[in-house]
Amino acid sequence: MSFSELRLFNECQWKWVLLKVFGEQTEDRSFQMDFGKAVHSGMEVMYGSDGSIEKATENALAIYDEALKTLDLSHPSDRAEAHRIRDCIPGFYRDCAVCPELQGIKTLKSELQLMQPIDRTDGLNVKFKGFIDIVFVKKLKRKTVIYVADFKTCQWGWPAKKFQDIEVISQLLLYKHYFCKMMGADPKNVSLAFILLKKKPKDGELCVEVAKISAGPKATEAALNYMQKAITGMHSYSYEKNYGSCVRSWKDPETKEERVVRCPFAGTDKCPGSAETTTGS
Ligand code: SF4
Image 1 (cartoon, protein in one colour):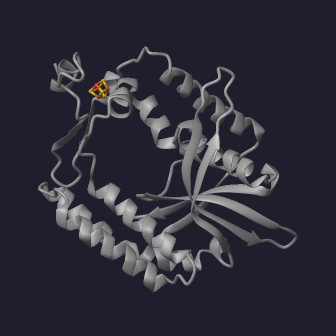
Image 2 (cartoon, protein in one colour; image 1 turned 180 degrees about the horizontal axis):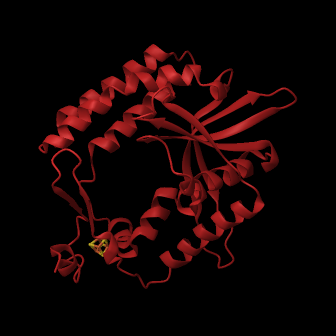
């Protein structure tokens, strides 16, 4: 069980069945996803041994440029945006180096793999798997704090309500829970943060923000319940179709036209019943 699988199941249970049980393959790619992967790779270089701003920037740009060669950017707005955000890449690494919260940190591990058994009362043998982007330590005046952190690219930051959304924060809460189990660490000594990398920071702001997440026992319990409920649902042999997830539409800010992205199974025989929803009738 990974966090992305958990989110997929909660998005549409039937889509989870098609992808994870029946093994259906889909072409799930976008310039935003490739951008995120390139930026993450650069962060791994930046905070790896012998990392630097220059090496990280070079690594991320090379990966993104390679991706741009094979991406479908036939829509002019996508083409413009895909190239605009390329110019944000150097700023992410430059601002990480001057961001006060990240000054003087020491990386313990980049891309730390988790593969920990999940306690179940029904005997199911399930493990939690994930990769923590970065685990680092920061020395404060009186104590040293271990941070479990995840990089997220975004436009201008996150609204306050996103930091309360269990579907968002349970990623870090679960990472912390299983990190502590794996390392035998006391949860009280481990802090959590999303490191937001802003493509459109406000004037005068850094494009890097360290957003700390409070992770007391109650929040951790809520995240574990959220996950356990999904695991129970995955083994229920009764799956719901979420027609609300078949189509995503938005107004293109450049051309003002209505843009639409459909689930790859919408209107196909893999998902009977979804056709009416996706044709707008
Ligand atoms: S088309 Fe809609 S209901 Fe069918 S799998 Fe996709 S999201 Fe789920």
